[in-house]
Image (cartoon, rainbow, N blue to C red):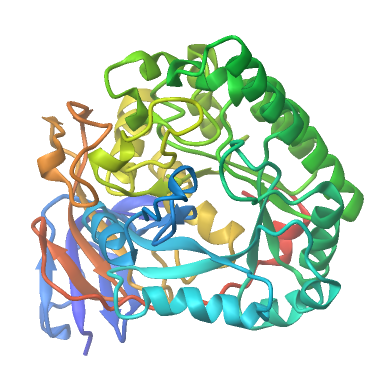
Length: 474
């Protein structure tokens, strides 16, 4: 006897999209069958999803929770925690979020992961995983040498920053030498290293020059976090990765030069992966000039329209692998508290809208194949971060994480429709997809746009495949 049978939907599996029955038992997909061929009395509960699109629950590989905003460090203002962010995610059809566990001096790496996991446990409506991260000027060899044990314990992804981002925020930069040491350890242990790649020298000089010119308004943000910075830092990160023999995941690609660097490296067989955010593929630096233009901002900055217009083609042709959010959720008063290159609040409120925007811009707007839609919203992130095929696939044995999406809609989005913040940069956006039901490990979490279950999310173990680590596999 199955626990649940989902029938009547157009189901996207790794083999393509077709009408299928999905039988679920013990939180996993137990069977897939041609639509209507599974006896209804074989399941304790049957849900007919009436022609909706059924895809794997989304995997957002890049969110931040419950951390002090770097440009508001003196005030102690923090972004929302796992409860609020995961609520938005589960409404939007995303079932797995990946946050950051920061190592602090005096910690063992296990302490860092335990501390961050405690902030999620009992609070989250989605499952979660954690990137191990380093923000200190120097990481002791005794800590670096703990990375293999942490990887064996299921922590398969790590992150470094190549810049302090702004002159006023607390230190977070990892210099190239320490990055080399971290990369050697992650590569040897079979883990993925994520990189926030901006050239710190270029960024900090640009801040000083803009200040000298009296041009510190947020409309100049793309001159501080500029294309040259992305070009130089991507070249350095990729060169170091190729020297070490490491796989890397370049977060929030924002410019053509970043796309080109990734395309060239992948063309030579290097396991280099790129991530973009929906904001980079829809907005541009011109949006900074709008009233409250800070709502569109994260780091690196939005770039020119030409950079924006190359994002979706690079996703569709396979140069870029994932669509993430860099979610840093706050309400409107915090997001707009600063309006200069020095004090603007970074991070996007976009976790809930990610799946809908991807369908609207990709499938409807550009003819994206539904299997590729799944790649960009769940499967590739799951593969790169070692969660696949438990996450990111509708397949026998995979977790029954499902998003049931109405694609027969045409509506204008308002902040009142959403749950992660009291504003949205997507206000007035015309969406052609709307998530109606979400399942997490076989449990119905959202039903007809109503949250019907409590926070039951769990920490996930990560094991990155040798295929992903050895070549550009996705």
